[in-house]
Amino acid sequence: MSTDDAAEASGAEPSDTPTDASTPNVEETHENAAQDVIAVDPEDEPQDTVNRLEAHTGDGIRHRAFTCLVFDGEGRLLLAQRAPDKRLWDTHWDGTVASHPVEGQSQKEATTQRLEEELGITPDQYNDLRVTDKFEYKRYYENAGLEWEVCAVLKVTLDEVEVDPDEDEIAGMLWVDYEHLHEHPEWYRQLRLCPWFEIAMRRDFEEA
Figure 1 (cartoon, rainbow, N blue to C red):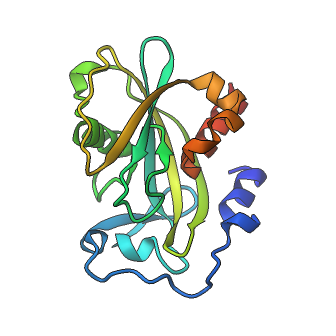
Figure 2: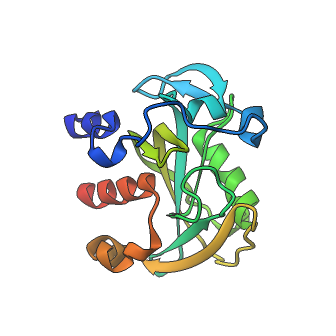
Figure 3: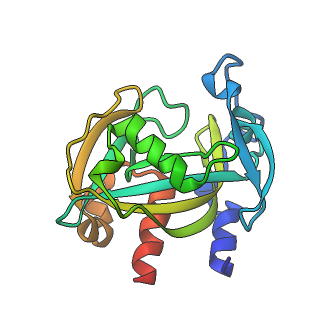
């Protein structure tokens, strides 16, 4: 990991510091409390499985995650708005799905599963799902919790763009010109992009 990425992962920017240093209040019955994620070291080597809610509250626990950018044949990116019932970054726009692998599952396998569960995108609609990047980051969200992830970035181009979103996961969808979004972020400011997607997009164009 580069020096810049290490600084990014530290969450040192003022906007990354929670307004309340105490552990955020979370409901004990939240569905995340019944799930586990994979704790990892900075090199994405598994350390243990940990409770998903605990990994996203207090000081957080570094864990494995992924985000997948879904394109059409014209190079447009599908932005998906996170459902309003999401505990973190609710109603923010992601590009396109993001989640966590479970124990014994690769990021690619987890992505295939989530594409179908969240958007109804089945493997017969693509044949080029690929991992393109990986980075560590840490970001706080208001007083609700945080993400501290080693995040794999995957890309896929759809041969057939028909989707069937799950409203419990996705509130809205928008196809955008990927390069235009990167070059003019101020024109899309009202969309409130998820931080992991913004990092993935910036790194994508820096390495291009």
